Length: 126
Image (cartoon, rainbow, N blue to C red; front, side, top):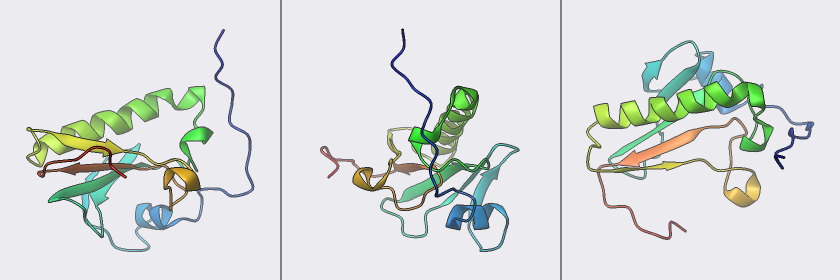
């Protein structure tokens, strides 16, 4: 039997975040990809020669808030990140990062995947 449980509901939502405003074109971003489920754009403060984010259009606050119904969306986010990394010249390798909650380093409460490439990555990341 799985130990996975549905996420607890929270008072905060991902409805009014910086990323929602980017999705709604209320603030500018250097968008590199968009489809009906996700949006990808360059990071405003890149930490590598290639640094972009992939976000779902559906507002999901944290990784803990994903449900069984979101499995296909989560896979689509990862596949989009991989495809764009290769298109942007990261064939030799890249890093994928998702932070969850404050202790995990999350600062925008709308799930997002960072993709960094075209430089040597180190471990541990920090």
